[in-house]
Image (cartoon, rainbow, N blue to C red; front, top):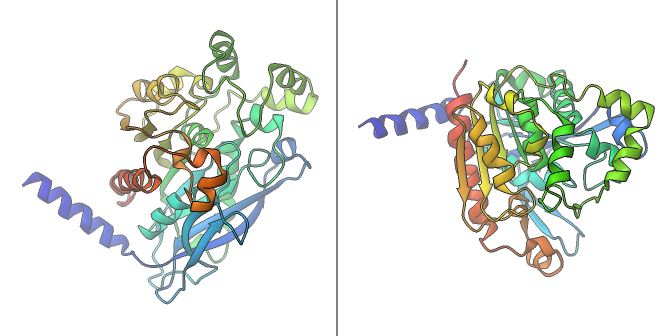
Length: 358
């Protein structure tokens, strides 16, 4: 009887936000002062992608990544710049952060699914660590500034005349993959201690997060040289500051990386709901030194472990062409299964924590 009641309640909450129709995609640009330190061309530009419940007559079209004649990833389907749904409801919001070398759109499979559930999803291309622009050593070093990217994006969209009035910022969540999972934890209140990661990697050079990353290989010498630059050194002094976004009520972390760079006491002091989903065969952000560490430290953290799933399984689905030419497209478990299980968990988690007013 209790399970039946909870099921009926969840359905009622879902219907209260009243959406299961087309998804729109919009793009905006904001500025963030620290972006100039991380961007290869020293621009302060922050690109933003928003997925949202669209009008019932919106026409969705496939969203594919890669060469137009041979795309390598199938993100889903969206209606570009479509009108918002006609109900004019204020909707819960999810901030979304990609991993090193990723993009907002490569996590679109997740963002689109959440928008179809009634959320407005705000994602960014993190300066200096995205797959469109040249990546930089500074962006790898100043990883806590990713949380400030999310803050800047939220503030910009909040003041957007078309989208701002649709946001219910009393119901704000954050999600992220890999370095984006780290970003989500920082945005939720975890504190960064770069020296912890340095000590960890000195002792564990073969750990997945310590080995050269295929997206951008950064040596200790490059890190030390960059840290000598006055503007980088000045920003490094703020690593341990509070980079949280206070209104966040729930954190959903997919294969979080760089957990060894987080102060354990700050993880133990988190008091908002956290859900962590891991691939058990992830050798890039090994669960034993990342997600499982966070799950053990964070009070009440929910943990979901997916058998046979690796790190890059959480990117947008590979096409047949992608599986032929992209090495990380070779997976043991079909990506659609991994995505569906992750989406289902997020729907339940965010539904429980964001669908009702605080």
